Length: 142
Image (cartoon, rainbow, N blue to C red):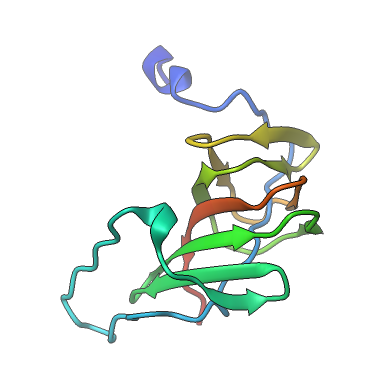
């Protein structure tokens, strides 16, 4: 890997692969039909209408043949103590703050901070006194 590539990597160094969160069973609003060549746009992401996904978590998702893109709003005081899965996951915080961990590394993410979770890595998160919104992308399972 060259110096240019390294400069774009996160400061977080992983000793083991990490895991994703909140994936696969997100209700879709305007989901794509398999094989359809339909493009979907979301304007003003933080203003999108969201539906209840789980207690304290609202979401909106676009589900393609291979990817799921979901905007999630996670309420204050929520926590995922950790999980893992066999696919990569990434995203960006659009509003609020969230503490995330991947393996042994922890970081508080703020608006426009991004994360990448390698396949198989143990990971999780917790919110603070206010809600957080994240735009999350993962591989569709099944």
